[in-house]
Amino acid sequence: MGDDDRVSKKEVYLLLMKMFSDAETIAWSRLNNFLLFNSVLVVAWVQLWINDWSMWWMLIGVSLTGLLSGVVWGSLGRRITSFRKRYLDEAIALESEVFKDLPQKPAALTKKLRDELPGGWSGTRWVVIIVPYCFAALHLCLGVFVLVIRCGQGYVGA
Image 1 (cartoon, rainbow, N blue to C red):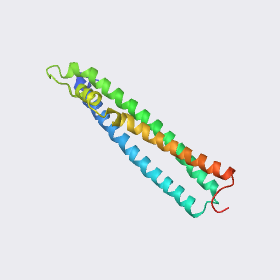
Image 2 (image 1 turned 90 degrees about the horizontal axis):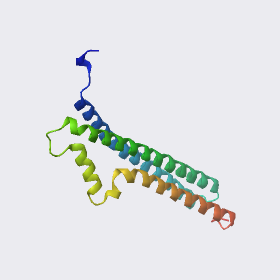
Image 3 (image 1 turned 180 degrees about the vertical axis):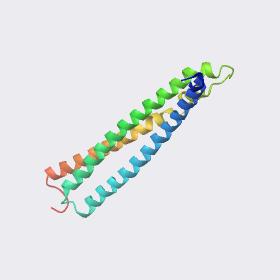
Image 4 (image 1 turned 45 degrees about the vertical axis):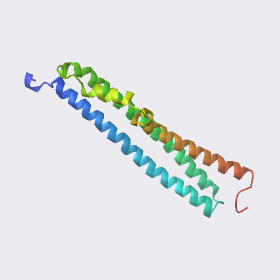
């Protein structure tokens, strides 16, 4: 390999920023898929509750599916958030060498705005983790509700 084959720090920096941006897109895309999937589960649960409560075991199955999907998607949210953080931190470390003459470094500014603007709790790093775990808790409550009603034999249509 000659000197022409070496990757410059600027190219590495640009790649890190692209990876950061792609991770952001992936995080929101996964959350959208999760919300669509869980909307179907909630509608299915409600339809089973209204139309045929005697199939309580299906209600439990839907609740378990929602619980597991929430935990899995929440874990995926934590994973992609850690990737985003690492890409941004690596880019910030390279900025002092790549953009010496710029007064405001792009990656550092991105991190500063993310951390200092109001509503930081509603950003990607929290929403893609908390929303799936909230849906998991909802499905857990629905499943426990069905079991309590079933064990008490006070279910509709008895």
